[in-house]
Amino acid sequence: MERSLAHIALFAAVIAVLGFLPKLSLGFGVPVTAQSLGVMLAGTVLGARRGTLAVLLFLLITALGLPLLAGGRGGLGVFVGPTAGFLAGWVAAAFCIGFIVERWRSQKLALVAGVASVIGGIVVMYAFGIIGMALVLDKTLLEATALVVAFIPGDIAKAVIAGLVTAALYRARPSSLLSRQANAVL
Amino acid sequence: MISLTSPVKTRAHDLPAGLKLALLVVATGGLARADGLAFHTGAALFSVSLYALPGRVFFTAGLKRLSILWPFAAVVLAWHLVTRDVEAGLVITLRMLSAVGLANLVTMTTRLSDIMAVVRWLGTPLARLGLNMAALEIGIGLVIRMVPVLGEKARHLTESWRARSPRRARWRVVLPLAVLALEDADRVSEALRARGGLTRPDKD
Figure 1 (cartoon, rainbow over the protein chains, first blue to last red):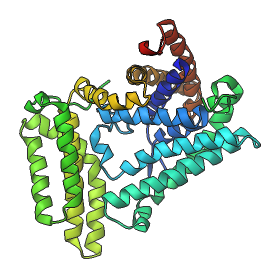
Figure 2: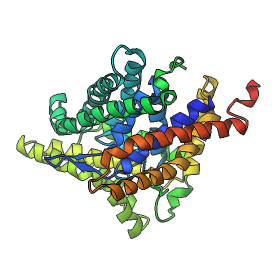
Figure 3: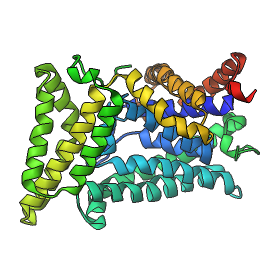
Figure 4: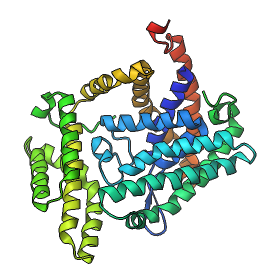
């Protein structure tokens, strides 16, 4: 219990700190922050249950009014704004990524974590994000997709990094990868 | 850590946090339902005037927090100029401005301790379903404490990378940062256990 809580809290803090890292600009001027990389890692490292709780804790503290989102944003406003769907998507993404990494053990970890990050961190997260944006901006799903499609290459890069970092972490400290422990469901 | 609460104390700080949140829920629901341009113009003017009430410092700080919305507003208005349906574009933009504006206003005028009391109150029924409120509160405290600590470690990692390489560190700090965080997590969990752990007194 204490170990779970400490890991959940520390990973919520990792998600916040990755948001403070300087933004990277893709070739065509789209800003990319490392924050969603933190969400992917929460899933690959902590597993479905604890990864989801880490994201929920992070979002709760953001809602309380601390500026933990990239760019120093936070408070209740971000949960009714055009990007609110993505925040809901983070929760689903962490769960989905953790679920895949916990169960798919027949391939190399870097590949599994990378593919899980693409499925959870891109397919699932964008599904939520696009629905949220379509609702707030009153656009069709296709129109909302057009508004966010430029960010997908950055997220593919993050999924690759998430896969590599997860595998390296497993090599460095096998015990720290809670998603691959025998009692991962705990 | 800097919080998003207002730089000046306002009269709204003295209103109960629960009341402000309840009003916010009602207002957001109303904004989502209504469609008329006149209604949304009035609502947006009302929201902006609430920002103006406590004076200039509050007004500028508040508007700065809303600046994240301008790119979205620009895209929506440009879009509806092209489709020749400017009224719908204005309704969407004004609705977004009022909803986010009012929510930010509640955040700016509510102290962390007050909003935590509401979380505790909302958590009471969930606690009966098995949510460990003590664990949740320790978790919130831990994150607030550890964000600056890990932030400092990330800064050191970036600096030491810079000392060794002409290239920028970027994502290369992510792995060592994750290792440091996991090490901290192990130590924190030992410390928690040494201080009596998280078992609820009623369960002993």
